[in-house]
Figure: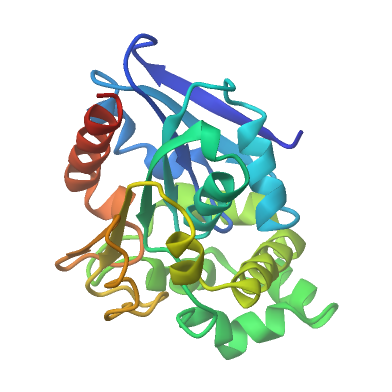
Length: 251
C-alpha cells in the first residue's frame, strides 16, 4: 500500500475522503478541513502517485471500511482517482465531488506546454528541475490559481518533494487513463451522484461546455473568478458543497 492520510472531524459524522492532485499533498485541503470538521469525519489521503490512476484508487480503497460507503472528493488528478475508485469499488462510494478534473486529454491545457514537454525528457528534465529557482517554480505554479492569488510556499514544497520523475509519471498516468475512456464516458457508466466543479478562469483544464449535459446524475457548477485550485481559492464554497453532499448521501 502506498497511501496514508490525516484524520479529522467527528468519528460519528458522515465520512468524507479527500484526494489531492498532481504533485500535491493532503495540505491542499488545509483551508477546507477546519470548515467541514464539525459536520463530517474526514480522511485527507496522501498518495504516492507513482503509478496508474487505478493503483492510486486501490490504495485509497485499502484505507476504507468495506460496506461503509463514503463521499469521495477529488481535486484535479485526484478527481480521476475518485472516479476510478467508484468504478472499481462502487460499494465504497456514496457520492463523488470532482473539482477541476482533467476530463479529456485535449482538456489538459498546461500539459502540452513546452516546459512540461521538456521536463519529460531524461537528463534535460532533471537539469531543469534541479536548477529551477524558487521564483521560477512559483511562476510555473501560477497557472494553478486565478489572477491575483499568491502561490503558497507549501505548494512549492510539495512539488519539490515529489520530484521530477514522480511528476512525469503521474502526468502520464492521467493521459493513459483518459485515453482508455474520457471522464464523461466513465461517469455515464456509474450510477453515483456526482458534483462537478470547474473554475471560471482555470488555466490548466478547459471548460467542458456540454460534455456532461446528458448525464442526469451529474451536476456541473462553475465558480466565478476561480482558477484550478478551488480548495485553496474558494474554501467556503467547497466546504459547503462537501457538507451538503455528505448530509444528502447519509440519508
